[in-house]
Amino acid sequence: MLARIETDGVICHTDAALRAASGIVVGFTERTGGVSASPYATLNLAAHVDDDPIAVRENRRRVLSAIGAEAFAGSLTTAEQVHGTTIARVTLDDAGRGADPLDGSGPIPGTDALWTTEPGVPLMLFFADCVPVVLVSESPRAIAVVHAGWRGALAGIVGDTVRALDAALDGATITAYIGPHIGECCYEVDPLLVSQFANMFVTIPRASDRLDLAAAVAEDLDRAGVSRERQWHLGICTAHNTDRFYSYRAEGRTGRHCAFALLEPRS
Image (tube, rainbow, N blue to C red):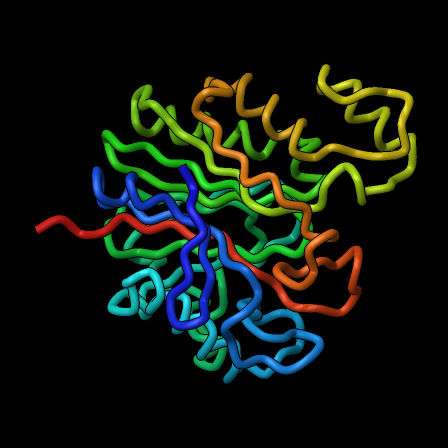
């Protein structure tokens, strides 16, 4: 279960019981406790939104420090999110891609889901309305972080990531954590797009101009074998809570909060 924890001004929604039981760290950040100036105030974690890269680097350090993972800052791995369907396995050779906005290494290109079985390699993706999903297998240990905007959700990137983990781990039991995202209440779209979703997902009503991305993601997870009982939904609308989270729909130019996951090394 996710709990809201504040450490030195940085707020994360994380599962302490999971960490205690299996050494797996998962969570989602809020937007306070950082050093970025407006319109990115204050804990912007994305390097692609024209924020000061020095501020982004410090904000990432603060998040890793807040979750007790600053020792792994050099192995932090990110992706160039393109609203696509590419899923990348992160190996030790990939570790550290995009970790420091100033070092020029660059994130893993053209990728919207990362997964790994490597301890000590934090995964981090960035959000401002799209649906963040963290997937966990406790035995064998594995983690994934998925970026699901409407394109990715419609294409089934979340379910496909579950299936990639399932194939690699030979049928492990997977749990999903779904973080803050724009809610149906605030996500007005073309009814033709809603109709496309209704063709793919039975939980999406056809006659509407509002889109419930979380319902589509939940159904996609269920189809891939992650039952509703193994899904933890934070259930917070980013557009309704811009004091706590970033929202591109509500704010336009703004920062990004993150979803993160880490397998702690075992002694």
